[in-house]
Length: 473
Image (cartoon, rainbow, N blue to C red):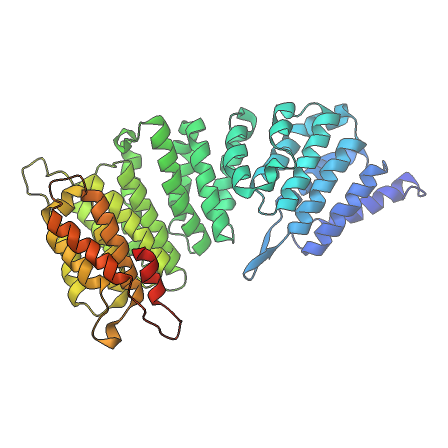
């Protein structure tokens, strides 16, 4: 290119830019970015082209195309970071000045929120080069001292700690919130969606009006999306954002939220159930997301009448008996929060406090469904002191029966016995210093745990009794 006349050299640059289009595949984007970087380093990319190049560079920095169970684009994002690094060395600060803020926002999102460690580190290196050579990056020195090669190596640290730090700067806060709520909330990788929800929780208190007026209403519309990734990520992000926002700004009191917003939030889980999104592909993770949302609403004490609390309880109980253990554990966590929030104090109209323990003790002893018994044992262990005190002997004895080897070989389930032993410990810890705990009940519980140490059941999975013995220890 350096040996050609200016017009012909510019034609080559034009051909390279044509590779960076939505019709091209990832390899074309990768090669085009590398070519742009080399052209810039050699002074062959003219400043007049920057207006045309910058939008393509921003797209390349966030290039991520799902492909089956994974995605393609890591090498494109890495090459785009190389282009950003090359631009810092190729152009004078006066030339780059109109584009610095756009480039800074795009680079910082990669530094903090990219899935791959090599991309985060490449973006960090490009950022440092731009801060050092261009000098006009907003808060550049403060950022490069916090987001260096080593600190961005840990993905949770980048998302939660560095992200929160960068959120203090007005120039970056809203672009980061927008990226989390539009891109990362529907990422193909489930752990990234969950981490993005936690990151939104850390950023939300820094700009509450924007979150309440724009981010949350936009997420509400995605909870019923045909795209499983979008509705799962949005439900989790709503839950975590509310938890961070209410916990930090409203003292943990959900009733302080605007009335219209409270109404929308309270209708999310019923709308998900009405749309039958628990069925078919992805139903399991939607159950987990709904349980997390119900748990958060209980933690922040979202106002709910007896009927609404009963509906939430019914929804949680439906997930308690799910055969997939993570779903059951999510339901147990939701039940723990819900029972503390709405089932520990009698209603103001004098209605007697509803007893939850009998809902789980009777099926635990009679129902042949192993998944139900696993969930209900943990549910008994999650009940608060006010509930356990009303039916403590029945709860303990039901758990003792569940912790023993079943006589019927077909009903033997080591996970139920393991969960029963764990629940016994939780119940004893909950009521230990209350008048409900008697010496007789305490001795019965300890004897059951000692008996569990002799569980040596084996099946085609091996020594499954070891799960029970480990729990008893």
